Each structure stands twice: as C-alpha cells, then as structure tokens.
Length: 96
Image (cartoon, rainbow, N blue to C red; front, top):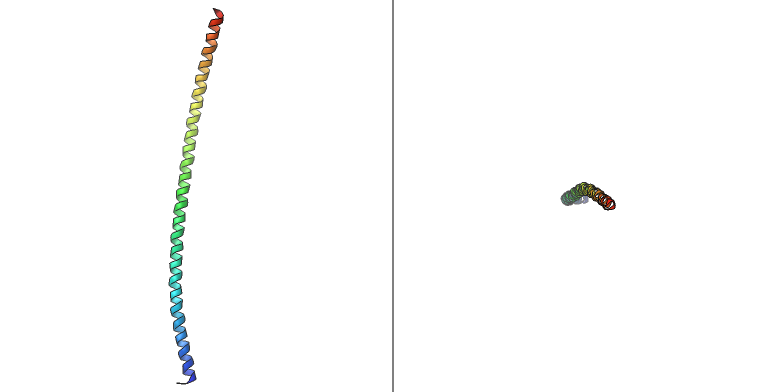
C-alpha cells in the first residue's frame, strides 16, 4: 500500500464520517424545528384564547353599560315622578 492509497483511504473514511455526522445533524435540526413549530402553535392557541377572552370581556362591559344606562334612565324617571308628587303635595298643603 503506497502513501497515495493511504491518502485516498483516509479521504474516503473522512467523507463517510462527514456524511454520517451531517445526516445526524440534519435529524437533530429537523427535531428542533418540529419542537419550535409545536411551541409556536401553543403560543398561537394561548394568544387566541386571550384574545377571545378579551373580546368576551369587552362585550360584557358593553352589555353592562347598556344595562346601567337603562337603570339610570329609570332612576331619573322615578326621581322626576317623585319630585312632581312632592311639589304637588307642597302645593296642596300651602292651599289648605
């Protein structure tokens, strides 16, 4: 075996080792990218849930605002009626 054959043999084994290590590195890279994809899906689902919760909360606040507006209008009406009765009652007492 000559030195030229030895160099070719070493180069061949080096190429085989490089190919095997490259394939292993690609498998790990694919596994890492798959986990990143799963994590991103989890984040997307979480933020979607948060967004939906915020939309629900805003809708509830708006509904409460409408209810509060109706209650305020009702109280104003009752207050107006009570005020008119009070002034009418005062008038009747002053006439007696």
